[in-house]
Image 1: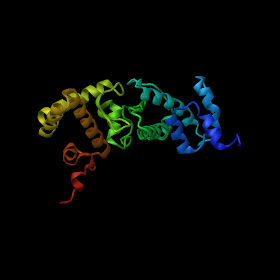
Image 2: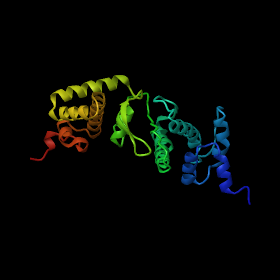
Image 3: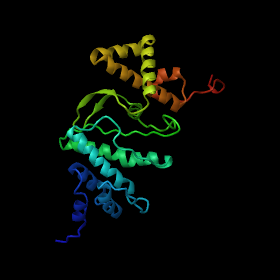
Image 4: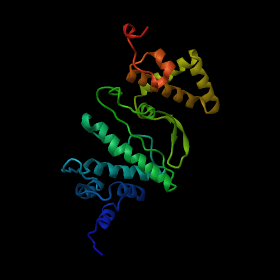
Length: 254
């Protein structure tokens, strides 16, 4: 047997990883790169590590995977606290791609893989905070769930085994923004029949606190899509997230 075969090298380089994390990595990439193999021992030892390698060699994932492995172990053991566990600092230009490629995508696929193995693993959330604004650009979020996660308002969450747990207001995001959204949503529920009907329905079926979070999250999503699409509030009420941009009166057809 050739002790230098890629399969043996891959397994030995990832001996520290949880079996689910190790399986995901090998299924996804086949084998670690040389910068990853040399970097992991230093990172796992808690040492300040500088990896100098060409673009595309997996430097960022080398650091992220060690963190992901620790978070996965805590999540599976039920020890994952609802607080910031890992802080990643990056230039703003590369931040979005790094989060999507090296965090959100791996975490989603590992969550699915854990479920296939019958492991109940709560979701591990990511968040982005920039120094300029609370949200950033109008095109930042592609899905409504990302907006709710960003502001820390999640009425319900899916786990890896298809289970659901009651939602909550997390520590993530801006507490003042959450307070204003909940208060504004309560005001909307008092004066708008559709909002009042949905609030009462949720409060009766679930709980008032969950209904407040759900309506605040709904308002956050509505306001974000209004901002992104440049639509008026009346059009947003009629068409929801699909409302297009406002058309000046002079350009509207007769």
